[in-house]
Image (tube, rainbow, N blue to C red):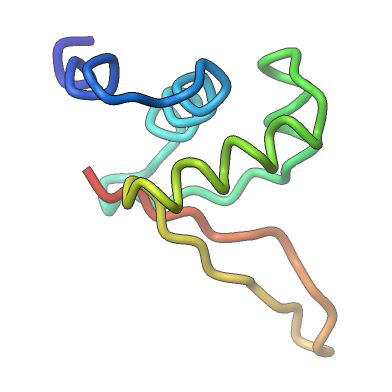
Length: 85
């Protein structure tokens, strides 16, 4: 967990720390993962709205980049999360 020590030294809400830790734990070697907001919310026992606010916090702090993914027929798919640190 010492790799995430910087996270606890930042002025982030607890919700953002919880979501970042969740995404960090599930990211591949390139720092990418794509769980749905509902999956994140269910796994860490937060509401989807709280997870969305946490994602905004992380994006604003520069710790997370987000890219919308699309299905072959053009419909939206889950978001691609890129961990920045």
